[in-house]
Amino acid sequence: LAQGRVAEILVTKGDEVAKGQVLARLSDSEPAVANLTAAKLELASAEQALNTLLRTADLATAQAQLNLATAQDAYNKAVWNQKELDTPQVTDQNKIDAINASIIIAQDKVEKAQKEYDKFSETEDSDPLKAAALNNLAQAKINLRNAQNNLNYNYLDPSNQDVLISAGKVEVAKAQLADAQKEFDRLKDGPDPEKLAVAQARLDNANAQVAAAQYALDNYEIKAPFAGVVADVNIAVGQQASPTSWAVAVINPLSWYVDTSDLTEFDIVNIKIGDEVEVTVDALTELQLTGTVKEISQAPKTSAGDILYTVHILVDDPDPRIKWGMTAEVTFPLAE
Figure 1 (cartoon, rainbow, N blue to C red):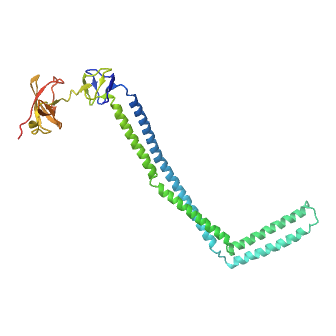
Figure 2: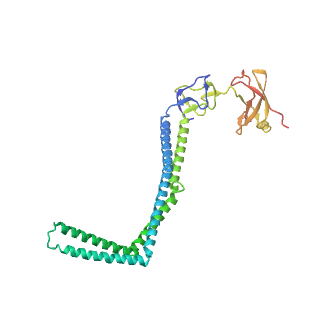
Figure 3: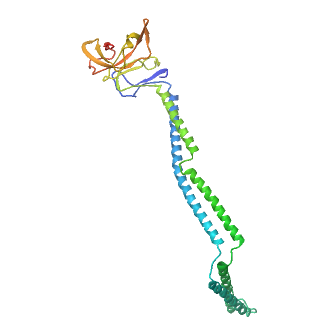
């Protein structure tokens, strides 16, 4: 509990309260509220950043896989084209002879078409017969060129320049494939480890900041430690509160405890947790109760020169007539 003046009391004597319910608040808690709000905003931002990193990592991996497949396909095609270029065309002689014959025929047609066109040398270009002759000549030349290209494809080797270009394309495709493979290997197991570590560290820090801010704010609020009934209120609005004195007393009418006040160092050595005891309430002498030792204080108190230890005892089946603050006598079993 922080030191400060009581700003608000939210319960009165006899009220039933739930565990964690705010019983009272101290003043000057605004900075703590602001710090908690800011810490929660940072936590939300850190969570969003981590989720975005994880989500975009899946997309990046899929894109990298697609790029790898594309690069592999491009490399395969480049290698295939290179092999096709490096492999001499194998054609039977009959086909070569036929292609050569088609070239001779095409050359003859070009010569005839040229002679026919030359007849119109003195004729106007607008003459339809001259235009027809020119068209026949052009078509004959195209047929000749196609026949020659057909022969080159089936018989002649590629030029050195074509070979170099093909080899260069293979090397470029190979380098691109290596880059695509490297990028896929980097992303296939999830987001970038360094980025993930930074995002996780930010989230962890944000959680710690929220916890610290919440703890600081909690010190400005007095909360019920368990569900029960308000037995007494020891503070007033405007009064200075202190962590050294109690503010609100909450009791659980279903669970009653008795704390001893006169067990010396000679008594305590014979008592252990779990011991069953007898309890007699001074105001109800005819009532015989039993209880169980739940806790033995490790920090002694001094009274009139005696070293005293407190034993915390849970009363079994408490009588409804028992009231908070009543005195009782506890009988411990004899040490064996």
